[in-house]
Amino acid sequence: MRQFTFILLFVITPLVNAQTSKLPDFTGLVEKYGAAVVNISATQTQNVIANQIIPEIPNIPEDSPFYEFFRRHMQPFSAPRKTEPKSMGSGFIISTDGYILTNAHVVETADEITVKLNDKREFVAEVIGTDRKTDIALIKIDATDLPIITKGNPDELKVGEWVIAIGSPFGFENSVTAGIVSAKGRSLAQENYVPFIQTDVAINPGNSGGPLFNMMGEVVGINSQIYSRTGGFMGLSFAIPINVATEIADQLKVSGKVSRGRIGIMIQEVTKELAESFGLSGVNGALVVSVEKSGPADKAGIKARDIIIQFDGKAVTASADLPRIVGNTKPNSTVSVHVWRDSTVKKMSIEVGETPADESIDQRKFKQGKKPDTSNRLGLALRELTSEQKKQLSLNNGLIVEDIQSGVASRAGIRVGDVILGFNSKDVKTVEQFNQWLEQVENGRNIALLIKRGDITTFITMKLINNDKK
Image (cartoon, rainbow, N blue to C red; front, side, top):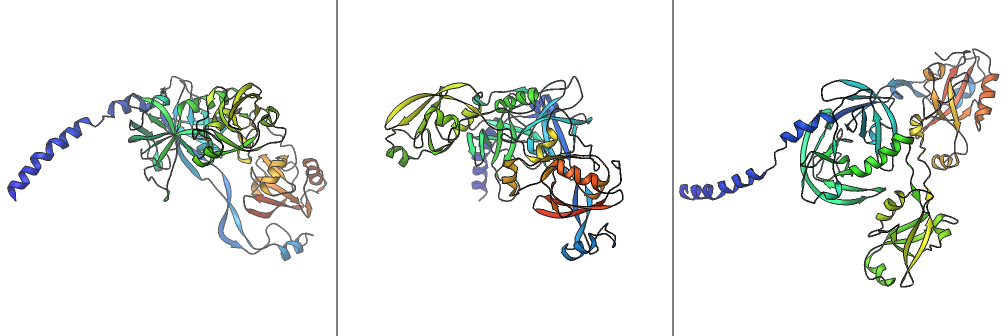
């Protein structure tokens, strides 16, 4: 037994040493480039429902004409209280004067963003712009002479190559994790504009927005999301290629928004069976399922059942390639399209349209330009719902709260993003109507606003005091 043990150790030890000698050393890379990685803390002030149940009708005296109405119809509710939930994320500095790249989901709903540098200095950041479709955000701090990252080329990455991530998982700042590139050009559900880099680098909440480095110390991606059934890391991490991110950042820096091309079609993947049925030799291209009437594709002559195999000189290998190619095409430009129809290739020209701006309610605070008017008695800046928002929220009418000054409405619990559906017992349809009703209310009287916030619809009451915006 002793002899067998000695022989076993003699055989295995050299192999272990050989493997150990080939493991990469990340220390120099982290020391040299880690200073450009930042920790991001995003705070959102909001009103939530407390645990204490208040059976009484709040703020409505018994002699009020609304008292009996609320007593009969309003269910007991919980008292609102202010909280400041925080989300943690990461980012990295791309210019010496303070521009920082991170994920849109890290900062898009924040009221205040704090950036902590590697040297422990802290700055309040301004959001320059966000793009939900790629999950990219560009923010800026007021600082100079900052360390910056070096941009790499994701196209040169090889599957199996070592990469590392630096970030703040669960708030643990400047954490370094390593792994390899598992795959390139991954398409994820509902993510049409990003060819993700898949890795097995350990990524957890707080790593979002942080850099993915290659072994030369170049940033090749932004760590964005993981695949998990538990909420924690399970070996599947996805990063946005840095060239995609910087293209988005350049547009955000100039205009605060991203302009994308569109052609107005619905597509699906070409399977082996579909390729055979259409007489196509290879499994490639994007099969057109439907064409928007009078849209760019319809005007160009593209029809349902066409297979788009080339767009603007770029091969469409898989259906997931087409949205990215079209999205990166400048709107209003005319490009060539090759389609497979009736067992032949047809060439046509198409004038690319523009994808509507992503004007979700949560992005209202990032609009550039003139600040919303808050001149009414409640200090509220209101905007009527668009047709798309009415459809999205399943509403016939309503006013979005775009901005709010501190005062009676703020103290009552109204916040940015709320949708006002009713004023006392009346439905609200226009901002002008709302302000007229507001001006007719005597000083010191109570009003009740019907508010929709997420899945909750409730009345909020307040006593009007003239010029109370403090």
